[in-house]
Image (cartoon, rainbow, N blue to C red; front, side, top):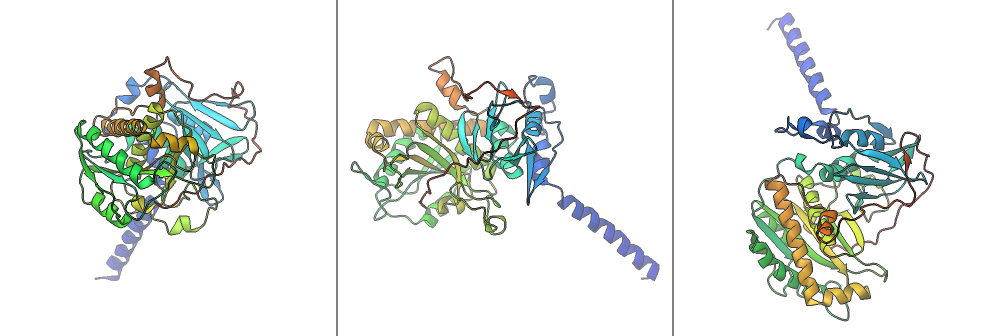
Length: 408
């Protein structure tokens, strides 16, 4: 090969390498939010005036090592009206379909009437509320635009995992043990799902011990399936009560119960290829639980529990109340109440399937309450809001504590 041809070969190769590296450097998480549904060129025609019209450019703001988006940028993208409360510490974004409330310096947010725990606190900077890009992509986007979640597939089988068993008793109260309650709820849930056309696989049918790895293995052997692990809570805080629900923590982020934002979260912790599907399943079930059984809302959370970390299909872990709290433990001990909990979980799973296969918008807690009343107020700000165009710069540290949750 001549020297001229060899030089030309290296020049062309260098050009291709530069182009490839440039493509990899683009912020995929944010860019993915700007895509319209592949089949929805008609969305721009049929959308209502206050619905999201994804034609706004994202304006990424760097804070330390992380990327953030402003609340007004988010509002413009999703077609939300944005208002700051009179204290200047919270911002409400809403339209006829979605509501999002953010609080400065807090990991707590309210999405469509239900508490959510963000991976990183909302940042106040130059009079703006800033949300981390990972929270926008992993927590907010799946709930505001569930129809945009890709590769959902079918949901034909539900793997029900009754937590604990055998010598692993779990939490307990004067009225009973967690291992018995979880198995009872799973047994009640199975026929409810079967009547809705689901195939059901139980990780355990009786009071036997089952390693966490085996539970995940059973789930991973199924196709067109989801995994639902049932638990009840306990803590040394006697005031802790209510429902909460978990899906796997995204890669590069701390879990809800983690106070320190350690560097290891960015480098070592594995995420999930079905994170969006798991989170949507979590939200669908949780809205149904709160919609059917009014209890204290502890929120949609993230954790790296083994049964979530090792499961390769959409997976959630339900915490149905605190056996260490008197009121909760009495409810859980009631067989009729456990039947009601099973019914609520079944409806939530069915709503997830409808969203996945029929592209129906999942029912929200307001929809469930609307069956018995004219409607509910999703968010009730203490004072009339001011306009977002001139928000007061928040100056408060309000990062709510979270009870640490044991590895089930």
